[in-house]
Length: 430
Image (cartoon, rainbow, N blue to C red; front, side, top):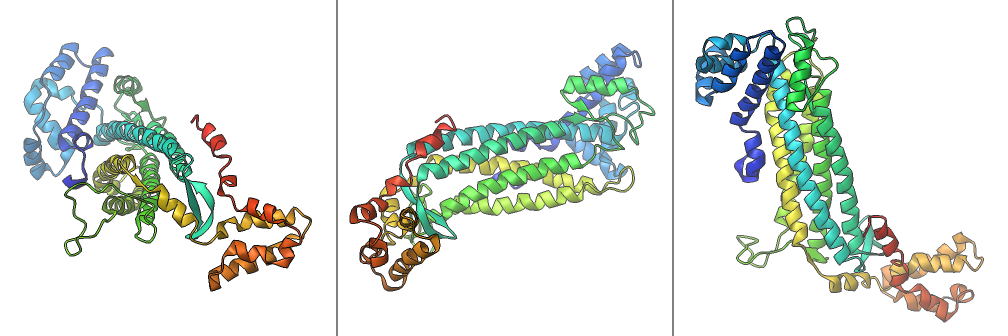
């Protein structure tokens, strides 16, 4: 991921320095376990702990000859450890240490994202309470439907973020595993107890069975989970973008002092951050496809997944971390215009009350098909001729045969539609 969209903590986690450090941590944990089991001298394990280090530049130099990054790394470590380096990587294959290290990095990345999502959820809940009873029009197919409240929009988003938190927690569990079982997973040259001991040290669960690699359905679930969360963020960002349209403008991104919207048009206030989130969600959905492609490998392993994961694992988590924090800030500072919401509710001259009027007529014993026809023909007069909907209804003999003026008036009250908002909020402890 480019620097522009990389937050320092997540960027450092996926740095090449940290990747090699995690691989070294696996190697040292394996040496400690072998020493505890008496397979290598305890002094050798202590010496490895004390002297094992690496230099990224030196690894690259060696790799230019070996064309194998793990061998280059081990050679560089051996240069620093000395004779006891003969115990490093004993009985292991490259994927034992690389896969286990990547699982630690995915686990740690998930922790950062979980922290981001929990903070975002709290902002959504706070602002939902703020606009709990702020009426606005609900839209279906982009067309005015029935009244609701802006707080319900925000609460709906917080509920989805809660589900996303559960998804990420599960994905974290799926990838919090290790594998130290050799070339094709048969423990041919390593005691299975070493895998268990390393897993305990690194807080990872040994897989029950592997080939040369940890199976990539785990990685695919991790990346697709991140793509789902990204799509949640895009869903929210898209709604803000729509509400910021000039012809709606019921809410909009905060526009900071000195900010410019267009190089050509000084009047512009554009939802640039929400648009950025929408665009970046596309990247993560694309990464999910690549992750699923990685599930299929030849026989017990090929290397076609490796180049893909070097890109999609850091990019996906860096992307989501950035977008979650960005959207948290957007919602925290979101400019909301209740007066415009009320204005827009009334733009269609009462059409939003058609459903209540329909049910009022039906409650008098009229067949629904007949009642629908009567209400709809008056609604069409508003759409096509601009006539006042309520006035048309009051002059319709079919409707007034069953409803008094007071009963019609009662149908044209938006508070009826939002009378159960408190009950909905109580479901979320708010």
